Amino acid sequence: MTQLVVHAVTRQALEQFAARPGHALLLSAPAGTGKTAIALQLAASLLHIPEDKLDSHPHFKLITPPAGKGIPIAAIRDIIHFTTLRTPASDGISRVILIDHADAMAVQAQNALLKTIEEPPAGTVLILTTPSAPALLPTIRSRVQQLRILPPDTAAIRTFFQAQGFADGAINKALLMSGGLPGLMHALLAADTEHPLFAATTVARELLQKSSFERLVLADNLAAQRQLWTDVLFILGQMAAAAIRQNQGDSAAYPRWQQVLRAVHEAQGQTASNAQLKLAVLQFVLAL
Image: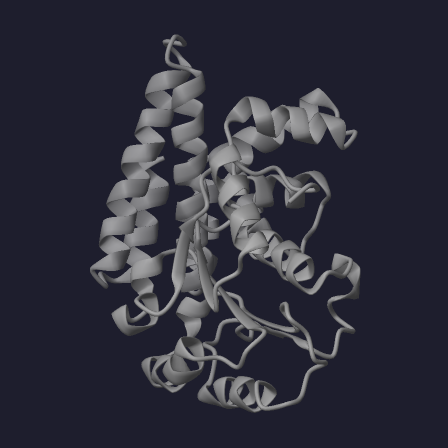
């Protein structure tokens, strides 16, 4: 984990797993934390190869959900077949399977994975990532070692990105916009538009900066994209919580961010209860 900003406790747990790996590990952390990057680096460490060689390694498989879709049972059948292929004789780990966003597996797909995840072939490790462990079946969770990735503190994040050559002003801006999520921070600083939360962060910033009328114009587009809407609420919640921590002594900024956080919580509740999405979006943008 030398090239990532990771909480010391999490780093120690990952190093212990790499030294004495179990058959399956579930990494859980909120979106934007950098868990995919951590999982990839762990996979490379287990196979004793540089991370940039993972894609071409014959005994590494990465499963990710297609955009806006779940992980189909066909992908799990592919994993099962992959575990039947021969690997070089080794006393250590010779095959790694990474299922990113494992919560995107349907119940049928999770059930199909049970036997493989409980008793993979010798030398095989499965790594799963998810924003929330309870999103997976209890039968999956009971068959894996679980590790919740702790967020590093702000000082450690700032020091890490300073060492990467980013300017203090850019770091401060990214800290606020990301709520201190290191994976999202890196995407913002590196202008990585492929990051799944990058678009939501752009929309969140626009909502905070635009007039009431301009927000209403954005509302129709948000109401038509449930996942984007959900991500925008998540980002605004992270931003508001981080800003409240930073501005408790600022009589002007503190109430404003409290207002944003209240609006986010109310909108998240309405969205979770399957209320009419367009109405929830309109009420939210007006509450800002």
